[in-house]
Amino acid sequence: MIAPRYSPALSWIFGLEARRRLRAMFGRVYVHGLSACEATLKRQPVLLISNHVSLYDALLAMHLARRWGPAARCMMDADNLRARPFLGRIGAFGVARGGEGDVEALRYAADHLRAPDHLVWIFPQGVERPEELRPLGFHRGAAVVSEAAREAAVIPLALRYAFGSGPRPEAWLSFGPPIPAVEGIEARRDAQERAVEAELARIQAAIAADRLRHAARGSNQAADQAADQAADQAADQAADQAMLTGRGEGFEVLLRGRTAPRFAAWPERALSWGLRALKGGRADAR
Image (cartoon, rainbow, N blue to C red):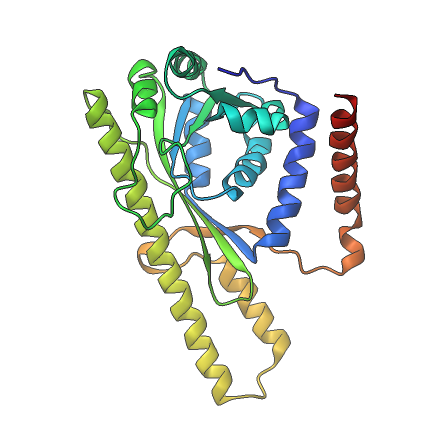
């Protein structure tokens, strides 16, 4: 196991960099259930169970870690953490799959989940997998942690990246309600996998509803080419702030893609260049 070396300052800085990259990559980042998850976190520790889709998952974790504070942790592969040691500064700890390293990391995760505001994020798949594959292929590690840390709420999180109506992809996060406890490691693993699959279905329904909404507006624009562009933008922003309908109810805009003039991004670019120079200097020192 590789223990985290949390730094409040670096966590804040890397969280800003993650936000910059998310806004540059995605048109919007939608979220469901985040406020409910954070309300639970204030009352008791939270074990967050998520599917693993891509490297963008790490950016989302870095962005959310700024909200959750110094007691948020994320389990990741030890080899990946050695390749990206800065992730340890925001609360990541490394697990060497198989053997004593695996047991030590699971014990660390369970011991961390002893008080409110303490959170551990685990990707039970262990590797990146397309979100449409079924079964998701969860391993037993998160179930072992939930068995050992019974005071923690186990909350499912589904992640998906998809193109919507705009030119850039959109990121979708759906936090579900706490998973009821069941007896047995295998039963816990199956319950966790089903809960994440249910949140993926919620995202799929929301994407379908969003595409229908944009298609309907597009047909209206085709019928009236003289529609006022400013009014259309205002309607788009109002729709973003509103809840989506149907089974996708409850999604809100967490982040909006950067559309400001290029000069407005200079402070964030300067921060990015500074981080790269810092990493390069450390590499030269080695």
